[in-house]
Length: 201
Length: 165
Image (tube, each protein chain N blue to C red):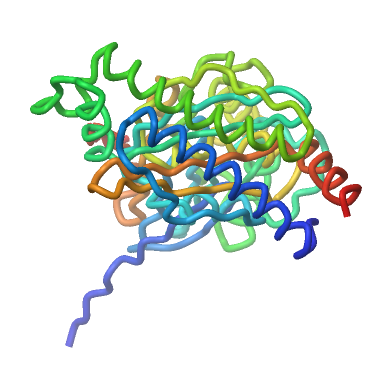
C-alpha cells in the first residue's frame, strides 16, 4: 500500500507527464489544451469506473498497452460531442456524421491523437523515473465507459482489490474536445515506481 | 390505503454480489465481464454477481466475492440457499463476456470474455443449476437490468439495442 508521501511524489511525476501531453496535444491540434484536473489515487477496483464517469455513457476510447520496465494499460476517452469536435478540428467533414458512423479516416485521427497524448505522458514518466515504458499503437473502441474501463482494470484486479490510477482531464480553452486520460500501471510496476521514488529520497 | 412500492435500482459493481427481492432491479454495465443472475421465483429472491475474471486460482477473495467465476457461482448460490431459496428451484441467466479488444491489447494475450463465459457455464453445471437464458459474446459492452417482478433480464448495448431474455 502506498503511503501519502509516495503518493504525493507520484502526483508530481504524473503532473509533469500531463503537462508534456497537453503541450504535445496543443501543438498537434493547434488549439490551447489545458489540464483541468490531474491526480493519482489508490481506489477500490469496483469504484474506479464510476469515479471516472458514468458507467453507461457512450465513450470513444483509444486503448494502448504499455510495455517496458513500467507496464500497464492507458486509455484516452472522449464523449460523443468531444470526439466529433476533435475530428472536425483535424479536417474531417464529419459535421453531420454521428460518431457511430466514423470511418477509417476519423478513427485514424483519433488513434493519432491518442498516440501523441499517451506517448508524451509515458515519455515523461520514463524521463522522471529513469524506467523505460513504451506504449503500443492505440486501439479504437466505441462503447459504454464502464465496459471500456473494466477492460483496463483486469490486470490489477487479478491480484488486488485496489488499484492506483493516474487520471487527467484535458480541456480546450475554445470549447469542446474535453478528454479523459487514464493510466493504470500493473501491480508489479507500482512496486518498481515505489523503489525508484524511495531511492531518490 | 394501498401504497405502491417504487422499485429500488441496485447497482452491482465489478466483483460485487447483491441479493434482493421484488420489486427491486439489479443493474450492471459489462464488457468482458459476466453478469450472472440466479433466482428462486417461489421464494421471491434473486441475486446478481459481476464477474471479472475466470479463475481465482485459490487467491483470497478480499472484499469482492463476485470477482472470479469459480467463487462467484459458489458464493451467490450459497447466499440464496441461506436466505430461503431451494436447491431444485434456483435458475440462472448470464450476459456479457464480450471480446472488447484484440489479443494484442491483452496482457495475457487471450480472450478474457470467452474464458469468463466458459468458466461461468462450467461452474453453473457443477451445481446442477439450469441456465435458462444467455446473451454472451460479441464485441460490444452491455448494460443489464434484472427485474425481480418478471424475472427478466433486459440487455442493452451502446447503440441502445434492447433485448429481454
